[in-house]
Image 1: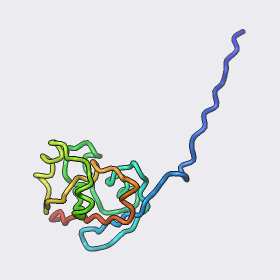
Image 2 (image 1 turned 45 degrees about the horizontal axis):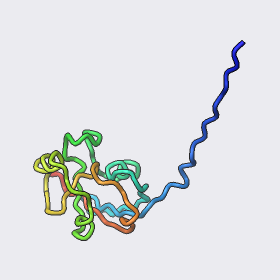
Image 3 (image 1 turned 30 degrees about the vertical axis):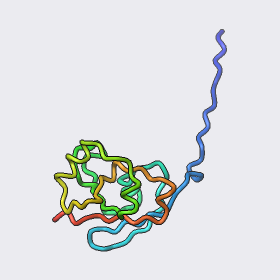
Image 4 (image 1 turned 60 degrees about the vertical axis):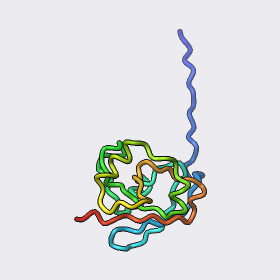
Length: 123
């Protein structure tokens, strides 16, 4: 007969994930302070915390509904935009010089205390 070895798999408890506090200002002015997991994108963080940010394409860079407006100091530290993101932002409402798509921005440790604004999409 054959001996089958069984491997045991263990998962790292999620309770030890690093988080930072981020404030989302919704289109109606409501402020929501959330614990954002480092390494997760800002669209997913919003969805995990019932923040009113759409994200119709699920983060596939095929829409502009996760459009966020950043403070200038934070915007300057963000990774450079891909051409596809710029193309999608061309379709967004209320685009500013510090606009980015939330699905493209990953939470970092140095974002502790950051505020992002969700523009009014016209609806």
